[in-house]
Image (cartoon, rainbow, N blue to C red; front, side, top):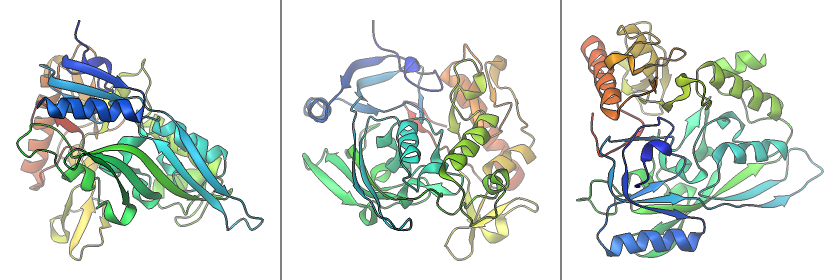
Amino acid sequence: MAERLADHTTLRLGGPARAWVRATTEDELVAAITSADDAGEPVLVLGGGSNLVVADEGFAGTVVEVATRGIAADVEDSDDPTCGGAVVTAAAGETWDALVAHAVERGWVGIEALSGIPGSVGATPIQNVGAYGQEVSQSIASVRVWDRKLRGVRTFAAADCGFGYRTSRFKVDRYDASAAFGGRHVVLSVTFQLPQGSLSAPVAYAELARSLGVEVGQRAPLAEVRAAVLALRSGKGMVLDPTDHDTWSAGSFFTNPVVPADAVPDGAPAWPTGDEGALKTSAAWLIEHAGFGKGHAGPGGRVSLSTKHTLALTNRGGAATDDLLTLAREVRDGVAASYGITLVNEPVLVGCTL
């Protein structure tokens, strides 16, 4: 029986793959990609499946599941608590939150606010994953990849990764522009530069700062920051729980839109972007104020907005991908009609479109 993507995605949606390879070593990963490329076979590289919306028809190609493991650290100790740190390299298939927990336990600073995010290490630079005032690009030193076009291993320093809001060169660069799916660069490992200390990086997110009882810009004990982030995420249904349908999602379905300053609706939160005249506003606020409250249901009640957070689209059980896409279109079009702002999906769409 063909392997179903629904069994490997946090949305628990998606049909069968034509072929499936589970790669537990870098050599196996490169060999699987190369073999498929030589055969002209479409390839879907699968990590934790937390950022994918896969068509009900499945994937007419080869899924390469990245199951590589390993964390290596070069630690520089110092009697001065403001000095020292670790250069940490993690295999692409490592679980992201396990790496965060590992870092917090060892006093490595810089990724603690990214606790509880599902998925694999290799996926984080592709989307430039971020939450609670931190982005993974702030701590990445380099990304090592298999270049499908040049047929070789390459290492990109952080400055060459093209990081932006929920994007990078790994998301933009295509292996074959005519292919329905397929990035040019397959992440093999990610190296992080993490200072050493007992306190977190400066807390940059107001909600997190309030829960910690500190001011924005202050620091807090690493373990307390991790615990606070996990509690905040759990309260929004953003920590995976097989018994809680609010967590049967792909996380935030829409990115926070960046718009001209005069296009931000009255009362909507807004943050500077670094681009003069442009501000980032809240997709969750736009959705709720366009009339889509928590728990707003889609076709047959099989999908809905999370009952805890309007930005997550959830599978209530027995749903199809088409159900989810119908709800996503309703929300996107409703926000556009209300505010003239078109929301953009954050998850990758495989074999389907909005």
